Image: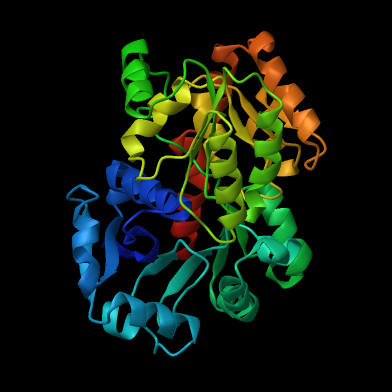
Length: 375
């Protein structure tokens, strides 16, 4: 008899899916295409009744079943944060529950896996939006105590998790993030040319691909870019997080001074990202902290160098293909790396080979093993 695997769709129903949402989507797609997994499990997405249309647009295959929860999304999220929900498996059904985004529900008859992608709220609380910081500080411990398994996305993230929450030792599993190699691969010159015209990009440009927020260290990136020749552009792609007014003001000032800083005012669709990466000199990602670092992995999978902060997780993901910024506050050092990457001409084959280490089969094996152990 098949066991039901229930997936909380909270991170999949936003109008614009976040990085965590993309992680959840890749997992659901992989499991729903894995015939060995489907012999033993039925995948059920749990969706607030007023957001089922947002799931339909993801075009998941017929192996993913959608079940409505008759609570509005906003109310469900609030009740989850305040620990006001009754044991949800009493109403939804017994099985294994997968919670991709820090939070989970009380369960009576079932077992669960809860993702805690990072503990940035402990390491760098100054970089976390206050409302979110309050929720994480008050609730993360409760969520971890009542789940059977805490999933992290890198060994570095697991080490940090155990440093701050040593009592979860023995119930953690590392499930590294993967990417879709059919999507993230070097694009044709024609594809790149069309996208450069669409986004009014110069022939040569650097790209930043992530949310605009203090943790990403964008001000240092902008200062470094000012030191480069004005023939080179800087494309910033990402949703607006919090405390971004300073960055926006700097960008506007630089644009008025004739610098080629491009921040699209509209949403950049996912299908454009591989081409924008492929056309770039390099991706630049000088973040102070990450749980994994998916955009650098996407970059090297497209054969594009990644200039990243020298933090443990970046070494874990990129290995010797990364170009590392040692002093995260040194714009001169970053500018020097950006200038030198043109001359370095890193091996595209080596970068792609590194990215291939993060295949879905390799990364999600530990998740499937964990699900099997919870049956």
